[in-house]
Image (cartoon, rainbow, N blue to C red; front, side):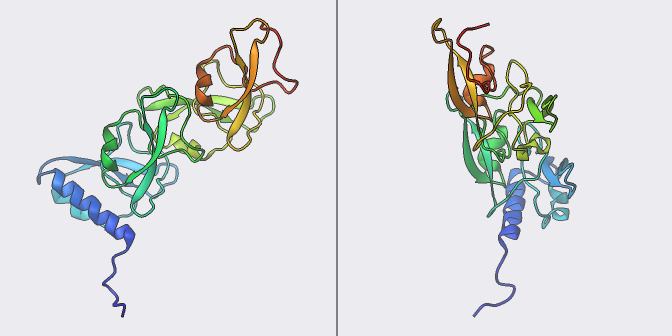
Length: 237
């Protein structure tokens, strides 16, 4: 027979794990820095520093997590499922720069120290090209909805992408040659580009790449993004 009060919800369990993790990491006067959920969609987290004596004031508050990731608190609200979140772990491999993995929201399984990781993983999936992170920020191409000026290059936080992790039409990161001047046709998260080759007889190959990272082609200044509707050129400019 089920007895009320005997079952602890998963969310409360996660909060208790968070509290225990914090308690184990400090003394009464050791400062602890964590991401406190504000309830504000535009600014979902604020970075707070407290001592162990103050922890009791935060136990039971949903969506808080500890510790603060290397690039700061996310600028979009984390989706916590069974006490876990999805992040993009930087591998150091240029061909597969990120792996999407699931980690505990309480402690991040040590990934808080990884400056190259992305917390949380973007909705469209992890980038297929290495991000250039400067002071915790990256450049992306934000889709505007305008035919004459389809993209604006903007700077956003790598953790949360200032809410742009949910914008299916954005390009993450911005290509080295700048944002496209024509609207991309995105199909299942992929686009078609003309990849510049070293061949004089076949100067471009028409290929399909991920919109997030462009499979590393964001660094290729000679590539044409996107491929023209009439096909790739047969000569180089």
